[in-house]
Image (cartoon, rainbow, N blue to C red; front, side, top):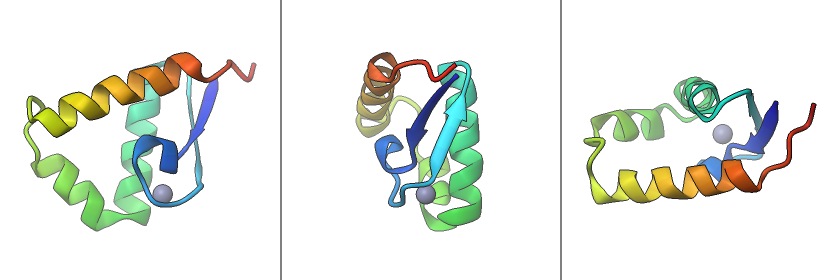
Length: 72
Ligand SMILES: [Zn+2]
């Protein structure tokens, strides 16, 4: 399992987000956004997946995942 912070996912707080796979982590992060930062969740959902900002985010997210050591 890997744990990164909301901030590392592009968010604005230091809430830890944990997951066993990048997809799982992304799902948990999205749930956190919906609860803690609903405005941000709405703008992320409104953005097309092939938007350059989302593509760049995906690349950065994968890099953060790769660089984060497993905690288990
Ligand atoms: Zn947050």
